Length: 425
Image (cartoon, rainbow, N blue to C red):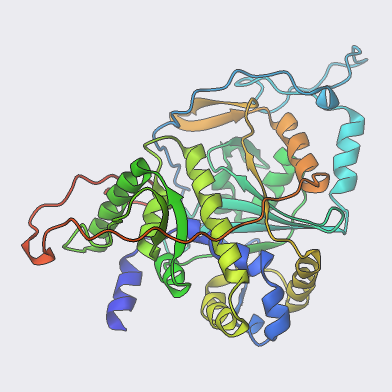
């Protein structure tokens, strides 16, 4: 037990765990309503104006630019084009327009988004990953997703808001999206999302945890389809993780399997979702979705007793401003949809952004109004049929190809061995 506690202190925050765990709490929260409100009393309650606020200057991450080719900006669809008539008065200068062309929305489009934002049949909850126990720098919200229960269209939806989008932070000015909460709490993050994307949110779930590996292991692992290149890259990430944890044998936990469906432990799953250098940050988001969908499906297929045990262990790590009554209400709404899958969306949207530098930091310059329209259409209007999530049977594992741990004196060249978030590949 002491070793486990020690490892938790050494482990940097695995922010992808927020997606997995918070989505289980919000999207699969029907279990809570069924199994009893005593579980809900294990959740921490915090005022949004206080959550994630730092008294230090927020840290601006400056990862290597995404290597995905910058798309050529395509004209907005006819449904999103602003009126062509010359306005009677000069139009105001839109934020970010000095870096990237912005779309002027019509009064009708803005009015519809405003009306949608108060639709009681659509419930939006912001899922946040942040490390308030960080020992240096500000507490950026590096993982942000909007979980949606759309009762109008009978859909569960999840929107990833990538952290490096340059936005207008109310009362402050330009900044990366992930820095808003560090500057003014979750409330300022709410305001920033509304200012830039026209989506009103006042509910959040935040997870500050060191337990990604333990949670996946508690579920008995997950089976995901990996290519040979992904297996190699994941093993590089695992070696880096072992170095961060002080594990002498850096090949500990390596994946030994043929390409195809592979049974992953918690450490191996973490290595998988850290992969970025073989492709891009955007493909990494797709891997996160694959992991989330698998975890969601596996969790929903568990027996009630095991679900209860998992939630009992999870909930102390959850912070939210939702009341018990609100959680039960959301749980009931999600349960009534009887969905077997989740619809996913990601901002920035293809064709509406380009990579760039702002104050020497890598950012995404986006057409914020056009993105807002697309996001609102996804949240409030999209009724696509989600793909059913199927659990795969894994290929047989292969024998380890490493020397005896006691005889290892050198480690493989690993990516991601620098200090920082475990998700920074």
